[in-house]
Image (spheres, rainbow, N blue to C red):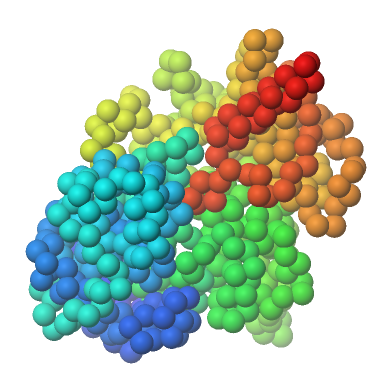
Length: 560
């Protein structure tokens, strides 16, 4: 069957969802020698970067499904998955979904003590892990073999030995069936366990991918998204449904590894988080073979303007001309704003070398999302141009947090899910992200310091700054702000940037001079001084704590 025929058959199937794309493709007659998935590690005798066909992918998944079934794993059984590679993450996600079980996908960078407590809270029946993560959990001294209520601990190295012919018939999912538990980035400490269903995690794929022509640049996709994230599951389902080639990387926050993979595998599109683009900003792409890329696709946190501009000048795309279609320099960057809880980004905007709508603009809303910006105190919608807390209604939303009804309901207001983001909307219907609610600082008198927007302005004002973190702290005498800079290798380490940064802090309406007046110090730091979460996001809460402690210790030493 042709690609268009398969896409049409999938689009017409009401039982298709996030938990059964692989088995539905086979059911609808997709060619078994067509694209499955490629990984950056070897799988069942297939070398790294050598793609598994659809038939080979199905066989690998069926083998693991048979292995789990033989050990009593079945529908509604939550199984924690704490593994290193993207291959182990996705093969076991699909195998457990085949059985109707609920894989709880964990980021491999979670520290052992955090992972141990997270597993305990899941109340999973089993844990699938590997040697590295077993050691990490054992070092946390939590009694891995005895605690958490686990009935079994499985080794990812063993599961491929199952007989695919012994796999039971695939479980028939209902739209409300849980198919995965993913987790938030854990910006404070403990990640929240976010439930994903067969229905909510497939709305974006059905509406935006199967309901419309295949997007330019998605013929051959390299994914640098974190595999255990909701965005990881959606990117795999997107590629499979559109019969695209897909390579999934296991180390998405290593910029050099991403560029090397682009050069080796030659994708037309690259998917990633904001941290990926910050890493690529370190690299002179004009000297690297990235010419095949016509699409950069971002989700999670919206990306910074300098990082986007760096990318859209790279790559190339087809342009119709009077002499026929020509390949010309330049690419497009699709930006948005999403989270595990949102299920799919509610916003979208496309940048090219010619676009100028930046300033943390996340675009307009997708057709399935209803957004209202609410006053945090009253719950009433704020006027156009005024910053409000983002409230969302959408069929993509997660139904809530696993084993945590308190926080499930705490994040709802007037029927809307509160994303925790602060935005404003302009007269044309474009939305602009200014900060996370937990990071914004009230300066009094209706004035606020928005750290994310401040970072955006600083990066634009100081081209030699690669990345920056604004650390604002409340003291007994008011708010003080220190700006921590990571510089490009070619930057002058001793340059005085204080005035440019002070002006940048005062630039955004709503901050004005009150924000600029809080600036205490500008410090150049190495990237090793940043405190990052498992997805690469800067953990500003912990940065504030550490920086405040260090500043207090320095002040005390000066007074002795």
